[in-house]
Length: 204
Image (cartoon, rainbow, N blue to C red):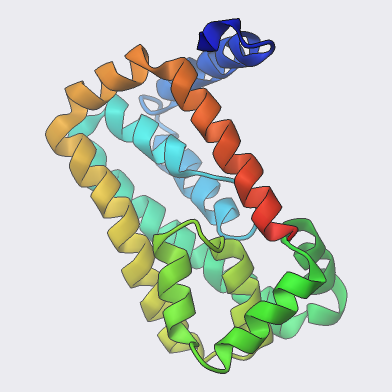
């Protein structure tokens, strides 16, 4: 049984306490700013913010589309900031930042892919977790991908991703909440596996 796996039960309880605390923030006057800040940071560093969007939407289902809009806008703003880090200050902060989110080999590979795929890479990374968006944003700036197409592709990809989450919770908010409550430990384990998998991809 999942709850008998060493460490999982303790981790689940700790994350559950954090989950409940973060849920209260959705009802605070600072909810919009907190959500925006998390998604701005998420676009530059390895920091999965989708669970926070789901949590805020579950807590306030009627604002799901509104929260999806905040997530989209601030994620793209964070992407633009990372783009400029890659383009303008690569020789100082850029290299250090890349070392935090990926390996030099992976970064070089991504740069080469832009020669062929360019904006399709931004769309794919914004929609899926296969290649993290934050790695793509840095690479796009370093490879001098045109800024306007980068912004448009980011808006499309991040918007689709976050508005799908918002729509699901808006229409099935109660079911989503009950599912999370009933399967919390399993979801924690799946989340940990996802984070470890993403780190392995970045460091491959």
